[in-house]
Length: 296
Image 1 (tube, rainbow, N blue to C red):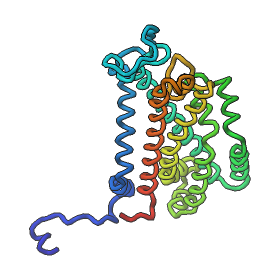
Image 2: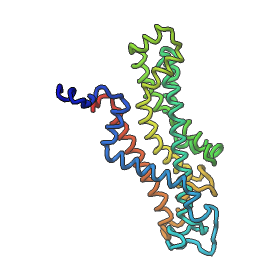
Image 3: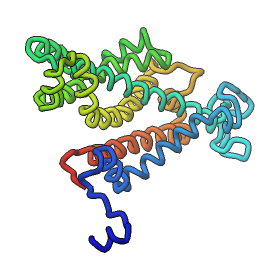
Image 4: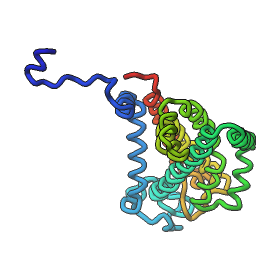
């Protein structure tokens, strides 16, 4: 060490001096399955965003003289029952399905963070009231209620996001509430309170940032659940309505041709499967990386 100091060589910084997020990023990079899954998710997102520029046709363009055609140079994935180019529809549908998943997960995280954060920090009867309401929401049969709500306020992207977020925040709220019960007893919380910080400042500046790790993991896993939820509602006919394509309503349209032209169901079904699987793998990687018990 003395020779290194004499030579002016910088010594390696110990892992303990690195920040939490730096260590988490290092651990996530070692999770190869999560890294590959994250790359697949990014690639799918880029393809979906670039659909207006790379799709060979308009998603509403109909060619009745070329219905149910097989893959060709003009239509790489063939055409559907109305002559739509399937590749074009798949790309535009990815924009809708992934956007619904991400937006619903974000809304779910915000609602869960708000309810769980306030309940855990305030405690007492306020905590009990919010948690009993959360338990009540958890006891509601979700799918029938989602179908009813989607029937009347669904049909659009924002309507489906609202429906999914309304019944998806409870798990995040319970998770955040548990973190808040622990964090509000920490010494830095008492120090901030002794310095005269308001409850809002303590909650937003000190407690919420320290409770973000489990929320990020939960939100990542919620993306896959929201994509499945949108696909289920659209498949049942109460989700995203044509002519706007989504992977779910593409499956609904393909069910009449499942025996004669199964590829119409294979393409959107496979994309739903792999997208949800990749988001779940990313969530698993983030869970391991953000685990405070992991030291390296």
